[in-house]
Picture 1 (cartoon, rainbow, N blue to C red):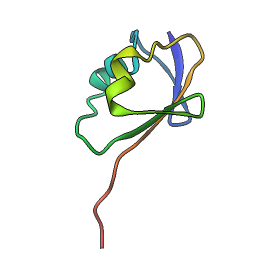
Picture 2 (cartoon, helix red, strand yellow):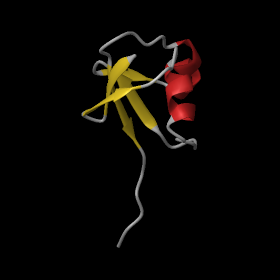
Picture 3 (cartoon, rainbow, N blue to C red):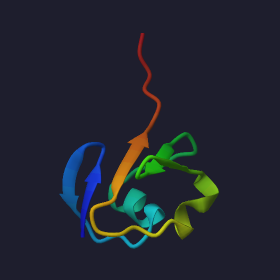
Length: 65
């Protein structure tokens, strides 16, 4: 399905937000996620169903100096 992930259109087969994160190799406890502007908590990602055209934002901390 066509999704917009961090501002970029992508074609991915993912039924849920958890599936999408796994398909994109995102791991870790420190991710922040939102679907269509609504925050999705870590414990809710497996139940967060995706549909055509959804806008997903995935934020992860970066280290730097």
